[in-house]
Figure: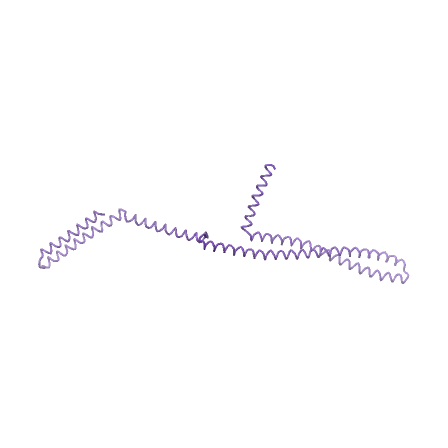
Length: 256
């Protein structure tokens, strides 16, 4: 076998495998193609059969006409013989023989045409039955295919091996949500450790110490103005509280 012959066989084999794979993946299209092909053949057969039926009817009509003519000639010949009209009788005898021969020929043709017409009608009925059978088979096989695919999907889900699109979509959504949460956590940590956040906390601490000292000063002044008992002791306590608050705020700021 030559190189090109082997190459052609290889390509033919690959193409055949490809076509078989496509057919397996599209059973509905394969069935529909077969049904449409049968319908086309049925139409061609119907057209040919109509010609046979037309020829049968035409032959039957001519046969009936010739039989009627033959009967008429037989009556005329009897009359001519009875009245001794020999010349007319001779013409009628010749015509009678021609008509008889034509009737015999048409009878034989009619038998053959009728047989062909019967066979054509039987073939058309057979095609009709085959088309209906394929249509029923298509519906049944596609239903069985859908049932089998559903059963396979259920078994895969029960066994934890399902790779359906909805399960993949759920996994993708879950993973996306986890990534968003991690991103939000990272941003929060970055904001807490940023210079602005540290400065804000320092200012809050210093402000709290300043406010505490101011409050202590206000209390001291109020006590001095009201002339309560031991003013010196009160003032001393207020000064101590203010100093402690300021020291605490400074220490916290240094720790930051």
